[in-house]
Image (cartoon, rainbow, N blue to C red; front, side):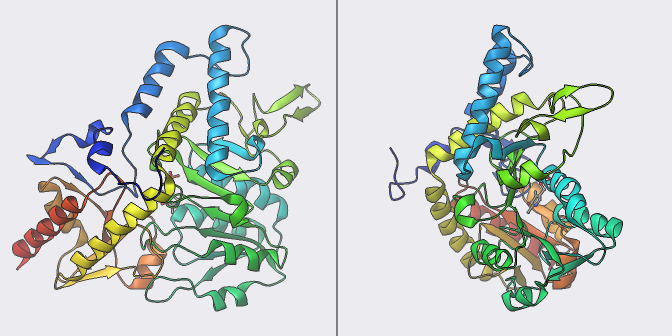
Length: 411
Ligand SMILES: *Cc1c(COP(=O)(O)O)cnc(C)c1O
């Protein structure tokens, strides 16, 4: 048993990640692009190989042994995801392709059903394009309007402005838990409470929260919560949409076909029960089972310990980067996850990324799928170092040396 206070053996943890044990451009890889995707521990890789080596079969249709094994493991992964989010039942866990797919599901199903002309959806300035465009297009289709919560210069939501935006026209609030660019941790409980007091449901984009902190959907009170498997050390192409069962029950299916039906005649189809109503076609079975293994892996380390360790890394990284002349951190919220976005005087972020890559350091540069947020800060792009629990202070030192090299090249 590990506890929140027991020593965090990062050297031991790093041994679980084969990809980290390599040289890139002649230097040991320093992987600081975790907000784009996280690396996979051996246990997840082994689970995928085992599935395809021993159990590969379709789920829910077969009486044969392999199909039963695959079905059992697929269902077990759903239970693991349910525990991870502390959802009330497995029925509330829908396997989707990822965060983008989960938001599209809610926009197409719940959104189409509930939105009419003149209605409003509230999002925020710091949303990822995946939590903007589905709502924008839905609003255009329905003659409805997007309302956007502004933020301050630190990258924190202006809650008074949010209060003002909540009106009888508001039909949904869709907001990120943690910003992928700024790292801001939003006060979801408060946001949900304010929306619910007016009867408005809330969707939370958890893509950057689920990998880094304990998430309890019942405590948050949100109606929908989405995250991506590939950002929590799991495979790509799989993610989770949590929805409260009464909402999901009342929603029409998003995509139609096999698996999501009870009976079909040419006159009429009766849809399947939750969660299968929202999982048409053969699902990403290996992905779901791999995601289960990933959730088990990070849960065994402990989400509270991961958060505490990453907070210390963030504190150290913030201190070191702040001390560099000509470098400005974008995103300085009081409550912040492990993301360090920055710009440098006279250097385009793309050049920062290229020079760091030559040093074996992987960061992301660009607009991070959040162009309206870039506009808010008046920059075309940022450089972003995003940390995970397998990163170290030594790696932040390497990053700082790399940035010194950037300054050297451009001076
Ligand atoms: C990555 C990300 C998404 C999109 O996730 P996909 O896995 O690409 O679907 C959405 N929102 C946030 C905040 C993200 O970081």
